[in-house]
Amino acid sequence: MEHETKENLKSYLKEQGRAEKKKLKTMPMGEKIDYIWTYYKAQIIIAAFIIVFFISLVHHLLTGSQETILYSMVINSDVFQDDATPQIYTDFMAEKGFDPKEYKADYHAGLTLALNENGEANDLQMFSVIATLLMSGTVDHIMTDEDVVVMLGEIGYIMPMEEYLPQEKIAAYEREGKVIYGTHPDTKKKTAFGISLAESSRIKQAGLFSFSPVYAMIYAAPHQENSIDFLYFLEP
Image (tube, rainbow, N blue to C red; front, side, top):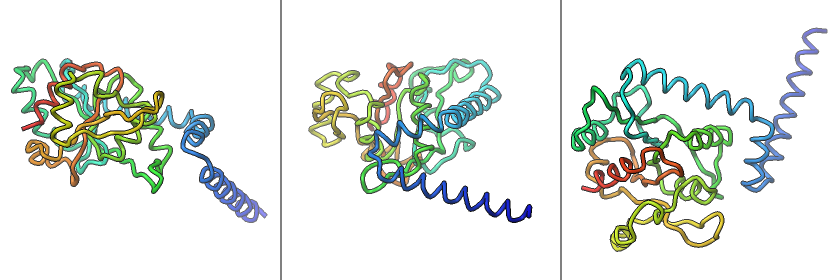
């Protein structure tokens, strides 16, 4: 009898899972996000909290009370969070004259975000965790593939380039074919969201990606000036 009850429960949960997937499949992206946030808010917040806590704990143990001058998030990279700090961050600090005993360039790696043929996140719970981290007020910029930058830009997480770069610099990037465009979520106009790093020798040498990444600034970046300097540092 107990065995039958367990089997019935398993069957019920499987059926519920299939119904849930079917329901989500028919929803547009905006409704999916709202649905996931409404019904899985607690799990998402807990997962994001654990990630942030773990990152903070590891950095605290490794770097003590150093002041953060930059927080970079690399998505779909070939490195993991417990790997050694990529050389580009230590080189950047050295070039800018930051003492590594007092300052640190934070980065987060290991998160993956795959998109479907409609340009939507396949794993909505992973997307929600990433979105929560991007809204946490700690991340300055992301480096990831073009499709992810456009998707995040078109739903409001990416700062348009015109809000942090001078027009002449944007024009120079445009002449070089490096600007990545999307549709602004509010104005519905073509908007520059990112800069291709395909020609960056420093990115190629860093071994962070198996593809050509795009740089994009996050709204409310806490270290925006240093983040812009980091972008310029990556140009050679």
